[in-house]
Image (tube, rainbow, N blue to C red; front, side, top):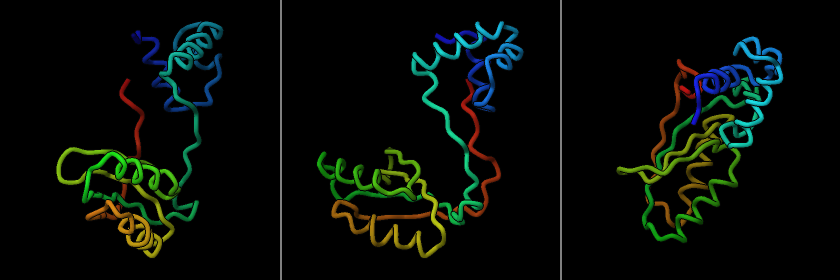
Length: 151
């Protein structure tokens, strides 16, 4: 279980993963060694999955963000595995979820342009034999960026 200090530590690291043990200690009102040990424990227990840089998609040449709903024609386990493997090979698909409701999957993708999104949908996703239907929504503006988890 997380106590209040653990929650504050996780919230602080989600805002700035570069915080040193000294800086965490100041934020948490702990010694640097205590703060460092707590961080190590949360890493070891799997609360902290890793550290990554957030890259500006526009600066990286990725002007189109889209959410893509995929409906499968058949739901056999081998079809699901095959589709998951396909999704795993595509760098433009940055996250994927299985869903309840009409769509079976929701994919989040970044492409350089609309032509790239079109290729992804028509030449990759719709070409998969188990895919029946694809519906995409192009993001016009993301007015709230991906936020830290409310720990």
